[in-house]
Image (tube, rainbow, N blue to C red; front, side):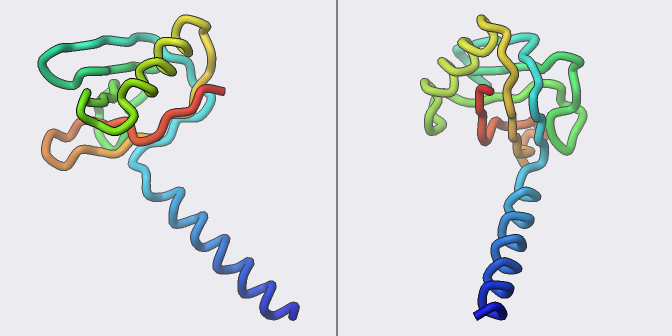
Length: 109
């Protein structure tokens, strides 16, 4: 029984570790310094305080398009976090086509 539990624990730790490396950028406990909306492209854009590079590039902003899943919910959460000066966790992926950072996951703390 202990061997099975140990094996299960190893598999779970491996899966969690693999998942944590799936993002090109992770920023924990940061505050939003700027929010922009556009009607043409990169519909929601945000920057974090201190302007860190947000994924495996030099881009200091991350975006989400209106056609992306949960655009409205994430937009509302971004505006709320900015207005209330709350810390966030932001996970981004590098867009292979443009090289810009796309918001993959967003949480208000």
